[in-house]
Length: 88
Image (cartoon, rainbow, N blue to C red; front, side, top):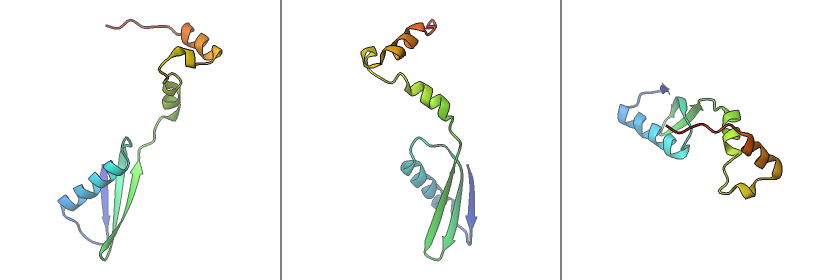
């Protein structure tokens, strides 16, 4: 992750604390960069995230049910027509 500090200097431990803050606040997101702007006693944090492949996420979410009976008829037929791969 690229970290940019503007209007001052921070120690590495301070930078790490801001990174940890972002990782806790935005769990599951991948960071590309962090901009830290120092303004006297305050800091402004801008997190830049990597793009997610939403199509892939949506397709995997189609089958996140705990029972096939919860799917509509068309979805059940689609599920039955899928090629099932062998587990090795």
